[in-house]
Image (tube, rainbow, N blue to C red; front, side, top):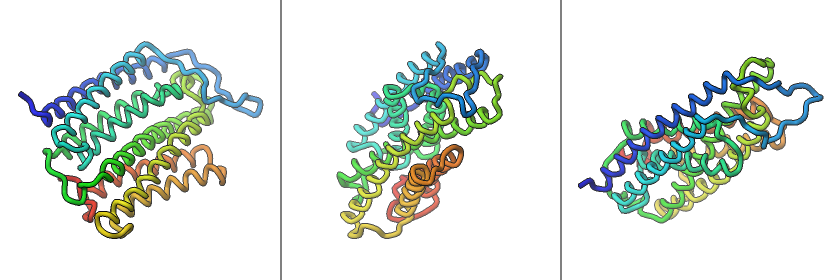
Length: 305
């Protein structure tokens, strides 16, 4: 009979298999939409302003991909819960568990966002990104269930790391929209009327607006992460701030997204400059999770490797 740790791994592999098929259907949907009859690109001063609720073309492949994504996510949730039961604690105390939980939240935020806006065109990005992330953390970062070190035996582990995971999920979706925005903007600048796929997607200004809103939510959560981490540090080590490598990079991420929001809101940074700032911000989040955890030592060396 399998124990919960083994059951968790089985759930991870099952979720990856379903995510793979979901990615194939989402990608197939993009390929099919490339052959659709293009619609005119709205350019020029006399064109009506694009709306953030404009209809999105979808195909049956996209709907199948979405159903499979939901099934994969349910398996992902089950795997995460099983890991927590096996460890008898929250399942985000090392790099493998953080990647497992953050990946689950990325899909959860994406699925939840569909009740707000039609973002199904991000399905290939979400399923592909989470599939890749699960593969990397399972192959390279997996560790057996072990007891928590004394510094992590705190209720702040539940709050601080979970909120950081949620912020990462919002930043990931924002980055996906920003990447798509850059591609769409280039298409609009050249008025490439023959590119059927891009004409089925929202206008670049709409994508920018959606990315901005998601990044703002992520920034609020990251601000709380920074504050909660300082409070936890005072409880664990007797000081709020000690210039530890992890603390510094958490602050750098906060500064980048604060600059992104400030530049867009007060300096009028729109278009590609805004998109690149959002992408760079998410890049620093990934750097903080991978390189900082692996290559640097400090009080936050809880990778488990």
